Image (cartoon, rainbow, N blue to C red; front, top):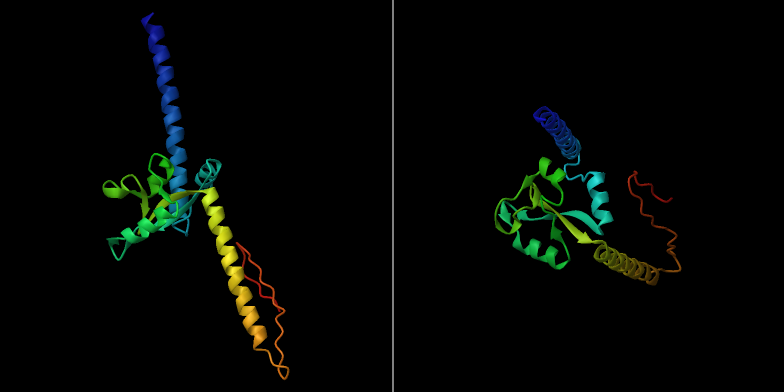
Length: 174
């Protein structure tokens, strides 16, 4: 009977070690992806997708300036809806980055002078909409001013079209 218990315990230990090993390998893989990437602030897609499924966007916010904690920037970002991501929320990120051990940033994932933060998607969409509207208003004002200064001797035609592209080299309208 004691032999059976020993056999079961060994199987349980092997299973637990195997599970722990897989978890460790996954965390190490995510950390290495972040470290080996030329963009040292790159967020692994698995982490971004997990937070997106929870209704958050991730970003890096400045926490220090010239070696001193930038309380003004931190306060502004917190008023804008950003919250620091803790080591418990993204353990795979904590492996490749420094984790604050004391102060108001305790548990935050830090890289250089920035910390990983999250913001609800709804707030991010509202900010994006506001910024697009502000940009459109400014472009309209510039175009209106340009057309006002047009002279019949040297007319100005604005036939340009602006496009936003991501991930490719820009191409300019001719």
